[in-house]
Image 1 (tube, helix red, strand yellow):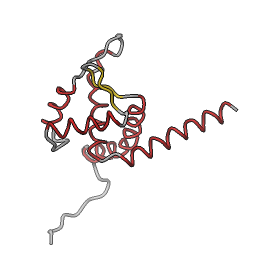
Image 2 (spheres, one colour):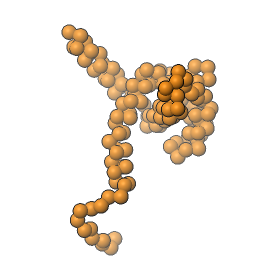
Image 3 (tube, helix red, strand yellow):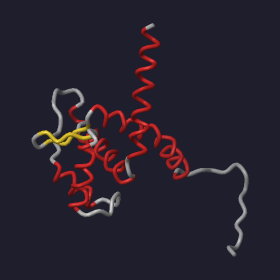
Image 4 (cartoon, rainbow, N blue to C red):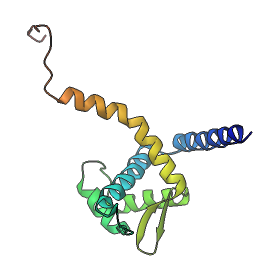
Length: 140
């Protein structure tokens, strides 16, 4: 009986996350994914300690502005972060940006969806030795 309840609960959560993903724009997804990756990367050095890195909104926005990930300006990035906060995916308590449980679940779902594409990109970027000889032809 407990297995059925767990399955239904998991199904309910996955359906809620899937419906939420449909409502997010690609920019929102990129920003949410970036927040998750940023927090994960910054907190790697504290894995075995009861500490975590506090990331202010402005610091995150400044780094994101310099990256090729988004072409938005500072005010638009603030608005996108505020939208993610309203949707209860991010929280900003005091001076610390963090993912909510809902945001963390969505981040993990995005990560799982992107993993096969990242693996394919890494594979094709490596030095691949073809087993057969290839032919070079002139472009049209």
